[in-house]
Image 1 (cartoon, helix red, strand yellow):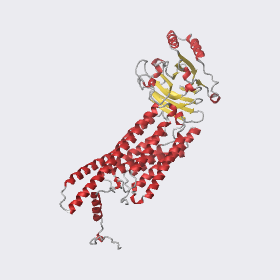
Image 2 (cartoon, helix red, strand yellow; image 1 turned 90 degrees about the vertical axis):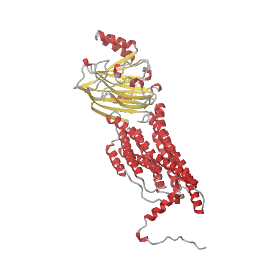
Image 3 (cartoon, one colour; image 1 turned 120 degrees about the vertical axis):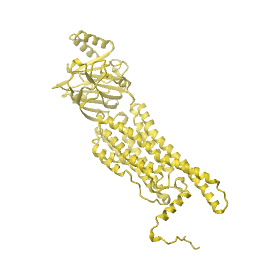
Length: 569
């Protein structure tokens, strides 16, 4: 049985436009050697980076051209600084997220919280490092270095000029003699609460400040997921923060584990992607073998389904290559990144198009799409292109930019809309089959008064059985799609948040495994076989096809009769 008609193409122009837009928007993919430039930004908190460290990993941060507009004055109570937060997983940090209207720089670090606050004092041209004495063993030592000896210090991180807790306290006691009475009481309160505070000089170049610091993970207790934030507190202490003051800065961040520039939870990803690419390629090869073996029952959509695992396999191969270069040198090769973006975009669009076509029954039981089906494709294809463009922009944009958060929200919303839209064709098909089954059931009451009527009554029963089998198949397919969406969009993300930082790659593993299982089950349910209820036409459908053939007959054939071929024995 061969399919008629051409593959529907609503929205293919949007697919090509989205591909070109994605390639224009995509720069070098997000690397582990970061450079971020912010100009006249108004945000009060900027998430600069998150990275998982093993023992002997290090982070180097170079802050330059930090300035405020208008310049900060001491009498306004404004404060600017950074915070370094350590957690064991990718869940939310309750210490940073509580009291969002109140700046964290104005809080004293709690005893059981692993956080370091770097508060800038523009008047005295120093940066104050504050952390809890009880949490000091769980936090790395932050070293401030000059530009001349930065390289030497990173090479030998144990030989630093950073003060230890005792020297830090003695420095505070020395400076305490020259401060006012109010400052004395504040210092004494800080000491009584076991808060260690250290001061380091910063460079002031005409109102723009620069400094450089780094830390090394020296023990197993210090391993974890570290998040670096920039904070700006404007307004009087005890009052809500406001955005009346602009800031600008250039920041370079280099982070590395002992043998890789990848975060601890991303180190296994290149091998994982290559392995999964092999599984998808093997599944596609098996599917091609099935199609060649059952040629008489193959439709065009079966070949469209065959293209999907191979496209997915190519996407994973290029993704693995992209991560390999990031792991070895800290940044990707732009050519490989662009090839990955192309295959990722094609894979995403092909996946949703195939699911929607199967749901509408195109090429199996009908060869043209209805207006209602076409509207779904006109919605799904542009949304899927927009989702992939958002994903590419997120991958190629630094996390601290304002566009990053915007496109991340767009990706989440559009992806949910796509997942919901592809369910409509399946629901419509289920409703249609339910109505057809009910109609066929009513037809069973026809009285069998003649041989012709008896034949019609048997045809009704056959159609009812076929429609019930199709209804059962479509219900299974609907459950499969819902489970796939629910698992990859909700369950896997919850697992990613809950697992320890070094096991974050489990999210990608579960996501790829779920996709592979979904592909295999879909292929099995809609395999080319004569006994597949999805490929069986009811008697009414056969009559429609015969009528279609009569209507489309050209005038040249008018007056000619169709004669059955008789084979002589």
